[in-house]
Image (cartoon, rainbow, N blue to C red; front, side, top):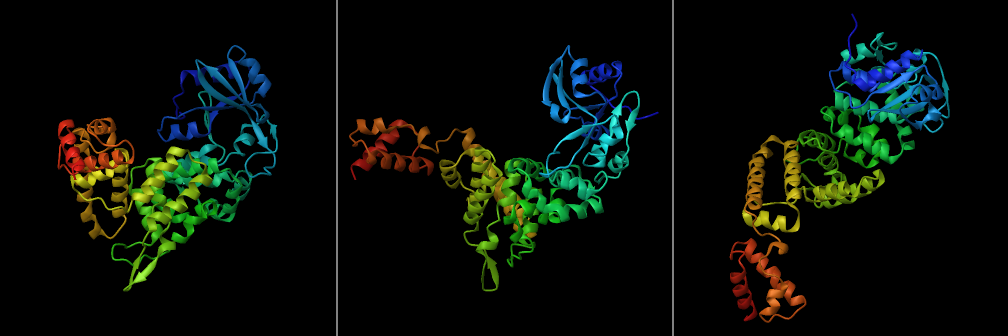
Length: 445
């Protein structure tokens, strides 16, 4: 009795139509891998012996989109559910290390699976025949191994993005990369420079958010360095400082692992100390990195621009990197001053970065974690009380000051700032009458 994989009704319907018309059809790739691992697939890909024109014909009652018909792929919408259906194919040479120059269609499922990247992604399935596994993918899933189908050098030369996909899968799934595949990754890492920045960024972010990110960063720093060479100086760079027990790269990998797995926070952790090798000085036998946060920010900006990340991600990561070393005292005045310059969201993200930073240092530093908890608590209290910490929340405006005799222009801004400082310091409440009286007192001086 073979393993039964759950198929959505739309997938069953598509396979049924293919079979009733005399063709072979299977789900294939990530959906089979995920199903065997007990993960709900995000989407289902179908492979078939039907040629693209035949696929279009047998699905003529449904909406068919020619998404990649040159390479044998059409998308069929069944109950608004999109299914990519691709003809069995053999790929020609990949001159750009990314796409085949052309494809040849075949009637052999085995030949089709032989062109795929990893054994775990080469398994096919339908309800009639069960699992069809020509390359040992099911065994590799069971043993948590990532292995190329066939010759790994050939696979990576065909599509260099597979190098990033391999280490991303290792991080996300916690699988080990098989030795021959691993050796080929290092041999062919420079091919990653032929891949678009957007595709590198997408794989990098998924990798960073994986649960096994620490071990992958430690083992594959030279591979990442092929596309982000600015990371390489951190490797083996000793900090020679009482607060640190790791070199800059291992500290970075620990910080990435220690922070919440969201793209912005993990990117921030990856780059927060990237400026340290450029700022190292030794004083009295101890290493120091004065101004490293600003230098890290400059280097990070160049990298994020190159990776073509969206503006919100870029701006937020740069702020966190710049502020990760900024001291915040655990009192209301200090927290309100921070909130005056930055958003509440930024306060809480910077605190997460500070915690992760300290979790990657000498254990005695962990005493500071309670301080960050207290700052977070103060921040939440200030927000819940709707306490004033910015000019927009001040109970008086420029017009109120003009009404009591202040000259329009620069003077108004100066007085409003003095009023806000007094409110932040809790010397006066944020009440219009008291603020007006305070302002009158300033006018008389």
